Amino acid sequence: MTQSRAAVITAHNQPLEIQSLPIPDLDPGAVLVRIEASTLCGTDVHRWHGPLGGGDSLPIVTGHEPCGFVEAMNGERKDILGNPLKVGDRVVWSYVACGQCYWCTVAQQPCICPGRASWGHNRSDQFPYLLGSVSQYMYVPAPCHFIKVPETVTSASAAASACAYRTIMHGFDKLGAIKSHETVVIQGSGPLGNFATAVARDHGAKQVLVIGAPAARLEVTKRMGADAVLNLEEVTDAKDRQAWVLDHTDGRGADVVFQTATGAATPEGLTLLRRGGRFMNIGAGGTGNIPVNGLPYEMTFHTILSGEPRHWLQAIDFLSTRKDRYPFEEMITASYKLDQVNEALEAMASFKVVKAVIYPHQ
Ligand SMILES: [Zn+2]
Ligand SMILES: [Zn+2]
Image (cartoon, rainbow, N blue to C red):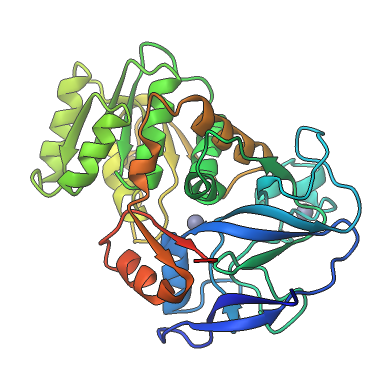
């Protein structure tokens, strides 16, 4: 085996090409993974439509949410828990920070390391070619941390943990404990919002309220542990949505608001927060101006980017140990073969599916 079929963006807004790319020799410590499942996310759609910041240059293998089996290793490797990694292990793996800069060593904030490597935006005509997940094989650079996926977690859900779910774990980590008297409001009912609903419920919130759309997604949200949901398409006035939250919180507002929708939802989210509450701002895109003068007194505003290696582990553990409590598989709503990558991206772009999964060997 010397080639990998992969979905390549050769021009923005044009159909992706399925190309055969070389499988390179492995540098010391590097690992080759046979991809079992790659989920797609909104970022893949944005990258396809046009370059994202940081100067993406084409051609690139799309996708950054992989789960697969270890195919080959150059040297001995261990997983994140210190167990030996073996050929045939089913794994996900974290991004790589440089380990040398101010953010890595002094601030201990590796997610904002300027030299951080990530997937789905690297040139596919340069070594090591295979750094996107919609491909039969992926090259995993030596510094990445591996997390073994237990049998109780499907490859599709494990793949989604490589982006959406580990980001949510990072958010809750930064937020600190959710106390048993606290109300959490979640804005958004996509994979981020629905996973956050389950984690907030699990972490002991008194009640979890979710504002999202459409109705079909909110049905999943309820099964993910929401006490009450509000459909944005039915309650179209932000004032009425604020009144709904105030009604559920004795007029105070939420102790915690988790924005997982879009930056455009942030100003409204701030009106749902009580004085002294905590706001976690995750959903990107959109333009929302935050009125600094009108912010609730003594509130805390958090932002995060991506996740640290331990958040990948936390997401996989959560999927495995809570699988009987929450219907995680309902968030992955459509599956495709490699040759159907354009169809899958179109379905994501038009919000026809919540999360699409591609099986590159089918
Ligand atoms: Zn993603
Ligand atoms: Zn660094």
